[in-house]
Image 1 (cartoon, helix red, strand yellow):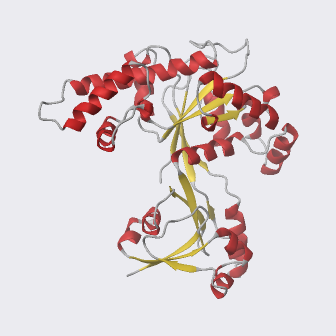
Image 2 (cartoon, rainbow, N blue to C red):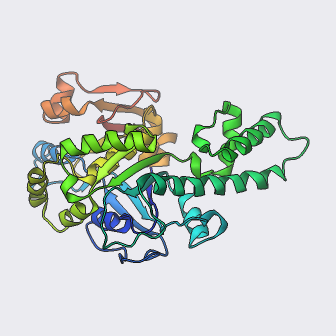
Image 3 (cartoon, rainbow, N blue to C red):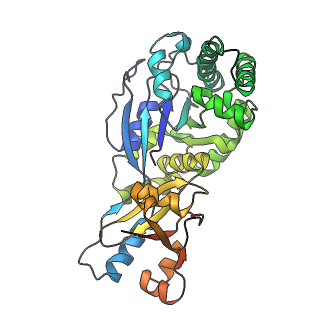
Length: 367
């Protein structure tokens, strides 16, 4: 599954600094002036998953390999999108490009600056609440334009659900409501999805804070404060410090762990941001392991074994016979496939089996 996270926000809020840190290399041009990022920079970032290293060790021992099998984690595409300014929906700044790039991502990571720095230019930025509302307004205005264009094309013989969907969307977008918060019937929602509305996309709020505010206790307090200030659920908020993430990107894995421990933070911003994206989109990972590779595969929560097999290869769905499944905890406890099978912890499941996060699976495929 291609998971893409679009990093958006006003200019100079820390988007490109965060992007560089996430990639652990300086691939986006970061400069202290508006529109430093003109084309969206896209980077593929591995999803941190400590389970894969354990599976690699088990596979090496069980298969009596000389070395470890290759580890292939699930990945997330991060897209660093040019900073937006007021009037973007009407083409101001790089508005049209900005908005078109957002349409292509799975989820929006909306970065707002939650600290003061007189040395950083505020291009159209006033404060976290105003900045957040400015971007939200431009997304809604762009959606309103899409619906207005659709209104002129709706024919008299259009379905009733299509007409009512257009009417509801036009009315409530006009009132400043995000498309994601507009109540529609299933049929109306299906029609609404054909417009790829920007404000209908899932969203995460990323609060970029100062180094002095980056500790577990302060993160909790900041999350509560900004949840109330911005009027969004604390489940949608991720607190990061782009400066610290940038520093972390220059360190080895062990040094990163020590740095975080010294800062009083359990997880890096990368881990928390990806985890939040997975939660928001309802994603999980199932695992495969063998001499060839140890790998994590991303699917939607609630998908069946048949659908999961298609994540590996579409041909697997056509030739699917069974899925042999062991929970990760049982697989580790029993040190691999052999003992898991002997103890009855490996189960043969059919195509309708609902895959759980961390399931270790071997698909049985016909010729």
